[in-house]
Image (tube, rainbow over all chains, first blue to last red):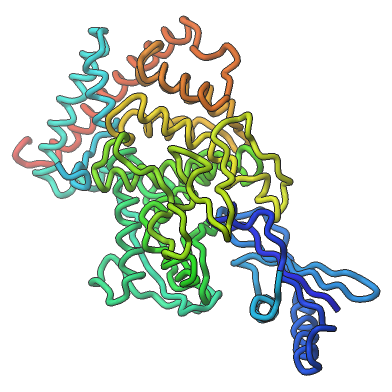
Length: 101
Length: 393
């Protein structure tokens, strides 16, 4: 499984335009870390109904897009500063801490 | 005179009244003189009658600051400062509280606007949002500030122009309602940069010539190695660093950046193409001279009020030209500078640079009529106020 996080928008959006996402491939993780990422992805995807709310953009709000590529399908879950739930935040922060560009 | 103390209670901005007093038209001068006289009478009556507050527009905009305790859940935040409480020991709380107050005073005293919605809307701010959260935003009801990541960004409440920027998004939402996409979105961002910068200039009593015209210069750590997030004076020059590259803002329509209307595309480059109208405002302010919070910001504010949710650069430019003519006269220095400024950034007014003569006549007639109605209204109000005072009955 490959997981990537794109961070867009915000007051300093111009700094982020064109920057590549943070990526993690479970093949590069040890078993414990891969299992933890799997649990976080399942939890965030399960609560994606709240996280993916496709509302009108709000000025200077940060937008987060997490793309989950499995062998058979690709899933994108998205959230903003005001729509991100706890599960989404935990996954986002985990990718931020462990991912690379 | 301290700019903060320059409180006025006039319905029309005093700067505009003073300008109109210089009009060559005797009817205009007479109407303005009536307005000033009656306003002074009313001001005297206000001093004598506490109950006059019932008739005056309430300037509330009460401030409340909440501590989000580094969570991303505003519902879990706690109230830490209000108008009735004393200063906090938390710098972020006090910065936000003071910044809201200065911005509120700017809109009230300079533009005659009572808070974000024009009707005394309360001002709520949340500080310490998230962990190492390097952003500030307006969520449609309140302002939210992070502490910064400590690496590139410091505490976001440390910048008055950013506080003014965020609060001005609320003003735009309650006036033109510019959508946050493509040119209207870039205009939305530009209005916040303009007001944010002018709030800072007003608080420092700086002329357009000496102001830095930078947004966010106070919130970067030394590691950023740039001057600011954006420069209204010289878009594209705010930073050039190994980590972030060069400031991508264009300063002319020929360099307009086409981006997709997506999250990754900054909704069509709203934070990037705002450089074009930003520079038009800077050129207008410097070209007119003096303080940006006088003629320039009044022209921009009235143009925002006259715009709609899908107004683009050219439509806004045409509106500023028409508003400048309405406020200061067709062919006035102010109107000429406005049109030259848009031309300098490549926004062509397509031969509609000046309203036709009949429009200017209509505008002047309308102004006379408006001033006469205003004088009548103020006289009526004065009569009501005097009737409440036993000394006058």
